[in-house]
Length: 310
DNA sequence: AACCAGGTGAGGA
DNA sequence: TCCTCACATGGT
View 1 (cartoon, rainbow, N blue to C red):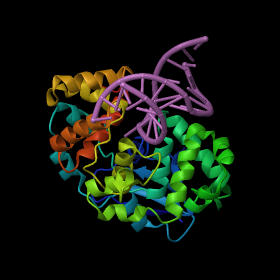
View 2 (cartoon, helix red, strand yellow; view 1 turned 60 degrees about the vertical axis):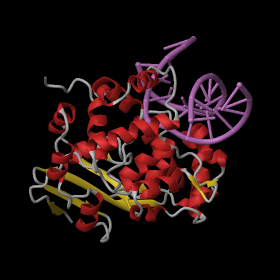
View 3 (tube, helix red, strand yellow; view 1 turned 180 degrees about the vertical axis):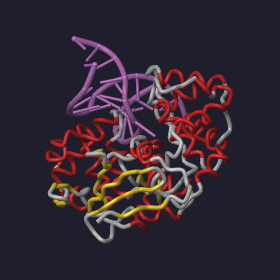
């Protein structure tokens, strides 16, 4: 049965949102964006200011999708807050309606553990392999889909079987975080209730003197907080961002830090943990409480060359 | 054939 | 705290 989401004049661009590198499981099939959510399958299509969708289960309803795409938040107001310069302004114009989402934290966590030192197509491939091998079968409109595997399933998977999903050296990190989460040593659903600093500390810093999650550094933690925990003030720094900052925002940094950014982009050296904190901190203060939105627009813009009109 | 890709952990100065 | 290196793999 086909149903609709009413956007009520809220800006939303489904395609840009799902294709901006924040989520890795959506596929465009016959004009419909399709994915597995919470043990069900949903397909979505945008028709102007309304969103048509249908799903395999009752629970996958409009309310859930509105929350997932964060449609009840005032994007125009967020635009007004982050419009600090011509660079974000042009990116917003180009990708108008791109939204940050509220993904499942577990899936997001695993995705960004996997996302180290690789590219987006292969992240999608590895996540897909993981689901094919360890997910539960779901049939929808005569097509078989797979759910994202639960923490305990990946915790009990052999290192060899994880490696066979093409994870490479990431296999042991995936297993490690799965063990922590399935053993309830980390509570991902609680991240939303903590402020940015505490949530980030929970993911990567020392808690009671010992490391919580192997395979989660600063960048991965920022992505997880931004894409699944609603921490809009997170500002992840990857090589793309370093490139953008060195090129368009050098005036925000000391000369030494600009050199560090350039060296990082040129692969001559890595950012230290302290560099990362300084750089991310500067950008968080510059853009404010929704800095993560600015980051996502700048990131998406940097990854899509040739679309510049000016 | 090198080189790159939404980085991170380990080891040593 | 900083620097260097290894890390698996698929695509150019």
